[in-house]
Image 1 (cartoon, rainbow, N blue to C red):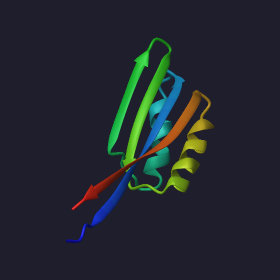
Image 2 (image 1 turned 120 degrees about the horizontal axis):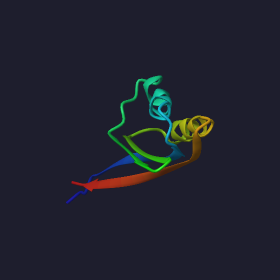
Image 3 (image 1 turned 180 degrees about the vertical axis):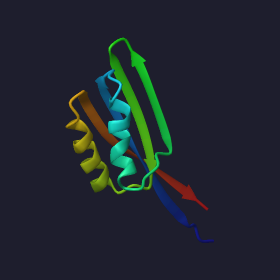
Image 4 (image 1 turned 45 degrees about the vertical axis):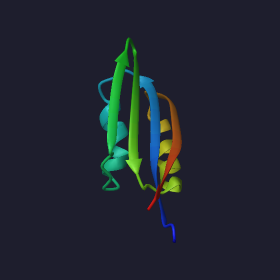
Length: 91
């Protein structure tokens, strides 16, 4: 009996920024420019801080790092973390 595996991944971005009105469109702009629509998007404000979590399936890690560096250059952004979740389906 043969086992086939298929692997997929999800890139996760975690952005911490000053809670300014222009932060969200600036962050999403880097995805829109490349024709990408996030699979999951969550933004929460706590006082003067904004936390944004974004997930994109099957994105190249090199592109993800580049987008992370670009978002980190936004004036209001304090920190950008980029990570990858991998899934293996065994059929």
